[in-house]
Length: 127
Image 1 (cartoon, rainbow, N blue to C red):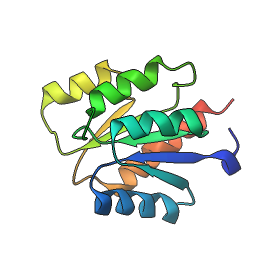
Image 2: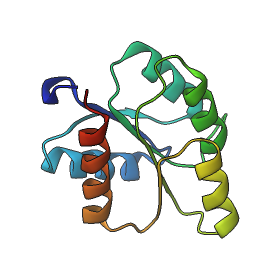
Image 3: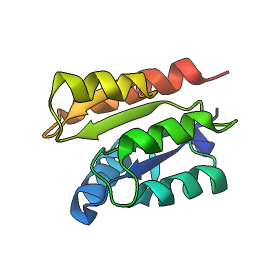
């Protein structure tokens, strides 16, 4: 996937946190689009060429676990999904990976760790 087409979907219902994550991506030269619910995230994945997803778990309408599972069921749902959440239990981490997340970060997260992980996943998903 070329850099020009690289768009990251940020799924976070807290508008301020969504904007902060999108600003972080922008600082590192990545374009992003916001979604604030799981339902909106599914629509955005269907309507846009999404290279990767930063996904919160605690979302209205449909939680991040269900959202991740449904994205993985889509024919084009193979992009890297990084869960970024306040839920810090081993059970949540295991469930996140079980439903298809490629990485799991707990808020407050290390911005460099998330960006480096995202970059590695994007480079490895290039064909």
